[in-house]
Structure formats: structure tokens, C-alpha cells
Length: 324
Ligand SMILES: [Zn+2]
Ligand SMILES: [Zn+2]
Image (cartoon, rainbow, N blue to C red; front, side, top):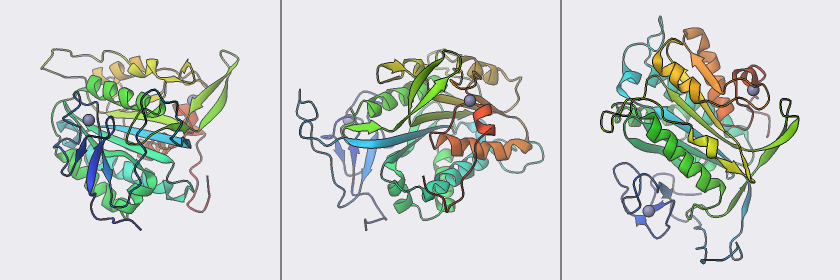
């Protein structure tokens, strides 16, 4: 059993020679270019991946297969704490979102291969801060004993952000790390091969191969960065996400607010379409009746099961006794 209480050190995801006994203030490596190295927690007794000799083709290293990665990009800007999430709901958006993410993660306690599912929960305002930094599900459950513990810790970290909204920075950074992870280029994790599914695309009449990797961005606002003057979402960098020589867009967007908001239109406009249903990979939460759907979406995003609202309709939440 690992020491649950405290990581002994932190290792940069990009260069495993960047080791920290105390993490940086934002859990990104300050020896790497900005936001390119995530500090990954390491506990006493953790096995570290072997260093990969240059020019070697995975000879010494064992490739970890059947891996999944589930990413949540969580808007933690000031507006997430303003007022009520929905009319007639007393909680703030930050309270609801933190509880739903924690609940969805703990629902995964039923799955059998907890060392093969990785989580990256990245908080953003006009800055970034990883909350769960490429931990496996097992490590998350070792660290937090209940969903309530996890929710409280997540909410506290969100409160520490509370600034403006830089969606471009969040997307760009998430894409960078996702591609590196899938390519097996994260030194601190090592060589991996994602589990994947083959889905028949009724539009192109071809099969497509999709890795068990999903990224969900949840926001309630518009791009706002006074610093560089860019006040629109520039692009969807996941259009360049490559798996097995093909582009697969694994980004889903969720907007918490009115469908008429500028931010909602902007986010929806950059989303790709579901390969199964040809619907935008986009979800709108504009009233309290959709709180249940929010939970289902977070659950869906932490598994390989879908992309769009139609996929969500077909989603069956398994109970804790089932295995996957
Ligand atoms: Zn580094
Ligand atoms: Zn769909």
C-alpha cells in the first residue's frame, strides 16, 4: 500500500530529470517552456519508467497497452462563482461542476483496470493549473477516499483561480499534452498504446479508429485576454490530433449559460461533428433540468463512450457492480 498522504516528489512530464521536492505554484515545470511540462506526483515506492536512450525504438522499455486518458478542462474564472448556476438553484456553477466531476470519477471505481486509465483535470482562467496531473484512477482513489474529499479539494483549487477566461490557452495546452501522451512521449509515463475502438461512420461509409482518449472543456464565458488583445476563440487545435496516422477530433465542448450568449456561439462554432451522428460535439446547459445531463456528460467524458448529445441519450450509466 502506498503512502496516501503526501507525494515525495514531482517529476516533469517532459523531462524526467526535472525533479521537484516542492511543486511550483502552478504545477507546471519552470525549467521547460511555459505550460509544456506538467509536474506529476510521485509517491514513495512508485516505480519510475526507465529512461529511453536516444534513437532507441522502444527496445529497453515496456509499452503499456490498453491505456485510456480522460481530460477535463474546467473554467475556474470569476463568473463560475457568481450567483446561482441556474434560476432556482442555490449553488454556484463551480460548486455544481466540482461535485459532478468528482461524482463521475468516483463512479469509475467499478472498473477493473484502474492503473490503465489516466486523468488530467486542468483548471483555467487566464492562467492554467493542473488539479489532477496525469494520475491513474488508482492513484486518485489512493489520494482521495471519497467523492466528497475530491470535490472539496477541486472546489478549493478552483477558488484559487478566479480570474479572466483564456480558452485558447487551455485548448492549446491540452492538445499539446494529449498528443504527447498518445505518442508515448511523456518521459515520466513512458511508452503507451491507447485502447481504441473502431466505429463505422455512416457518412463516409468507412470505419474509423478512435483511441480511448477524450477531452471535455466546460466554460461559462467568452474568450477574454486583455494581455494579447485576442478576444475570440482562435481555433480547435484538436483538429490536428493524430492517432494511427489519421486525424480524430476527440474534443467535446460544454457551455453553462444561455444559448444566445456570445461565448456559447463561439465555442459551438469550433466543435467538430460526431462521427456517428454528425451532430456537433457540443452540449448546452441552460436550465436546472439539465443537471442530470451534466452528470451524464462528465461520466461519458471519463470513458470512451461517445461524443455528442445523441450519444449521451444512448448512454447507460452502469451501476457499481458491473465491470468494464
Ligand atoms: Zn520540465
Ligand atoms: Zn454522437
